[in-house]
Image (cartoon, rainbow, N blue to C red; front, side):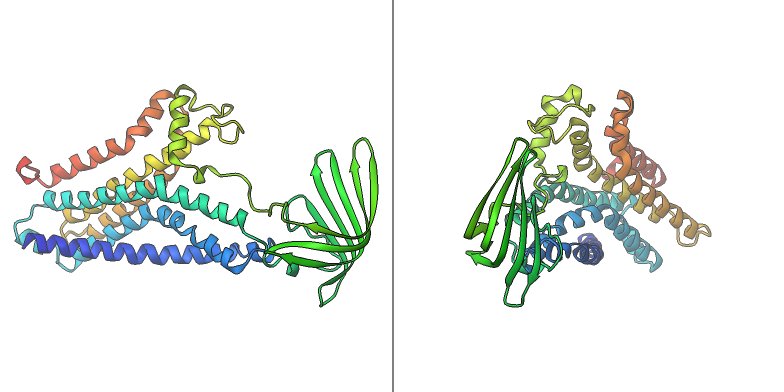
Length: 376
């Protein structure tokens, strides 16, 4: 009988968690997807690229919501059980309060493992994959982004100006400026031309013009009757570097192991390109490893609902205070990484703080529930 009761509780928790997390994830994803429409309207990528890129951001959104939605789930489900007197079913079947709380704690441990899997493995992989996919995709809507009498910077290091752009894609008065490096650039001027597409790679077929190469020492020009200017060598305006949240967790761990004594320094990097400094790596790894353990703390806070009887006059105030405490801990957990750069003792405190809070809350609950070792 007890197994059936706990199975029902597990089902209610899982169902509410999935519904609430999915709903919030979809709302945030839709808002984010609207903001990402620039991928089509300004960068020229196709609709397929846009959807795949935005979909690959879903694991990241989902992982950021888990701590809050798990706390909300437990708080709502346990409050509903208590309000509807369903919680009495546990006590009438001989289930001790500490046994009930231990079960909630075991569920929270599973969610911690799930969150660690997301933050350490899945999220960095999908974030990096989305950026790689965006950088390697073709500019399907490139012709639609070319406008008359307007300078266009659709790809990196290239400026295009068209005097006239007819409906049959014939161009007149073409000006193209290519930045080769900091000291050298190329300007192409042509009377007429057209946009060509060869194997999903766009370019210009130019007629009657000249190519002017400019550098610090000299400049020279070369006329032409007809030439082809291929755009495949240019990168899109998509970011060319990886952000820290896209970096493999093993790389971050190896960096910290190699420079452990310098982990707080902002002028030392463990990569040759000096993109990722040790203090930033330390922060990122802290957020991936430490923050998920606050889920257990939040489960214990939610469990405090069952310690105050329904007949208590101050019950509603008690629940409100519990919710505020839980919400405050969620905010605190998201900001705790900022404190690891203080003194050594402060750093150690914030590294072990989740475990300390788990012990404190569990000890308090044990006292309130008249704990005996046989209940474990």
